[in-house]
Length: 295
Image 1 (tube, rainbow, N blue to C red):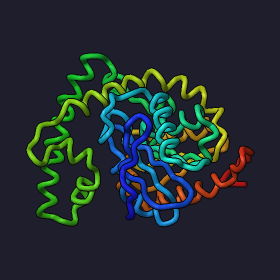
Image 2: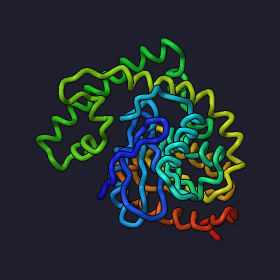
Image 3: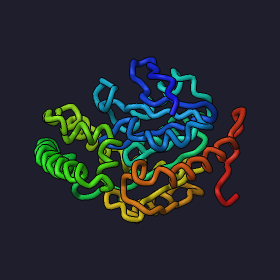
C-alpha cells in the first residue's frame, strides 16, 4: 500500500493512513482504536480510491483529549478540509466511529455522499447495561482498570499460544491492531492511563448523545449500509436492524464474523464500500440525488 505520509490538519492532528488516489473513502475507527486498525481494508481500496484513516482525538497520534461524538465529527470535517478531500466522500465508521460518521452526515451534509456503518452505535439498543455502568464516574474507572487488566492477561496468553501455533487467528489479529498490541503491553510496559481516560470520556458521551442521535436518524439523506457481524456480541443484530430501520432507505448487510469485522472480514467490507462509493458519485455539483441499493 502506498502511503503519502502523515498530513497535519489545521488543529495539528494527523492522518496515519493517507493512501491512493480517486474517490475519497474515510475510515473512522472505534473505541479503543487507531487509524492503523484499518490497514487491511485500506490496502484493498487504495488501488482506485484515496483512503484516509485518521486517529481520533484521544487515540493514537492525536494528542488532544478525547471528545464527544458530535465534536469528533467536527474535528473530522477539519481534517478533510486540511487534506483537500474532494466531496462527496464515503464514510465508513466502526462501532463508536459509526456514530461519528452519522454525526458528520447530519452536521456537514454537503461532505458525505454515502455511509457504511460497521457494528455501529446510534440507537439505544446498541448500549448494554455494562456500557451504562462504565459511564458512571469512579465506578466505571474501577471496572475498566480491572477489566483491561484481565483482557491484557488473556491476550498475552493468546499471543504466546500463537507463537507455537502460527495459524491461530490471534496470531494475525494482535499484530494488525496497534492499539490492542499497545494495550496488552507485550513488550512489558504497563497499560497507560491515556487510553483508559479516553475510553471513559467517550463512554459517557455515548450515553449522553445517543438519544438525540437516534432521534435525528430520520434526517440521514445519503445511501447507507448498516453492516453487522452474524456473531457480534458487542453491538447485537437487533441493534443493527433497529439502526437500519430508522435510517431512510438503509440496507442491512449481514456478514459472517463478530464485532471486529475490519480485521476479520476486510474482503467483505471492501465489496460493500466499493458499492457505496459508486452510490456516492450520484452527488455532484451541489445537486443532492438519492440513490439506494434497490434503485
